[in-house]
Image (cartoon, rainbow, N blue to C red; front, side, top):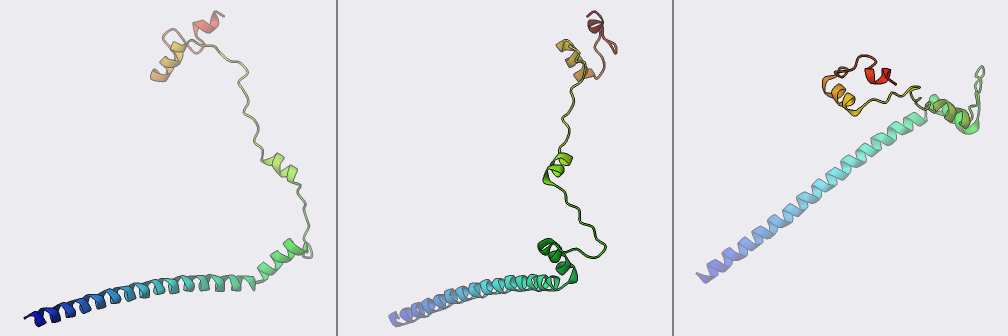
Length: 130
């Protein structure tokens, strides 16, 4: 009976160790498959880049940018950095010419009801009295 228990224990230990090893191998296979997929994507991108680098458009652009070459019939336009900054700058917002000083209740009335206050019209009496 003791021998049978020892044999079952040994077989169980061997079985679980094999399962653990198999799990590690499967994980390693998945990791390697993911690396293969990444390398295939990089390879595809490099092939696309290589084919683009062989095009005439790329060669023409590089010749213009790095060698300052110009095709027949093209005109070169030089834009100064200062001119670009001036063109891009937005004008400062202008302040209203006349600022009307109104009492605080007017703003609250206008906020809640969206109309001129009870004692106001388009030009209220407060402003007319000034």
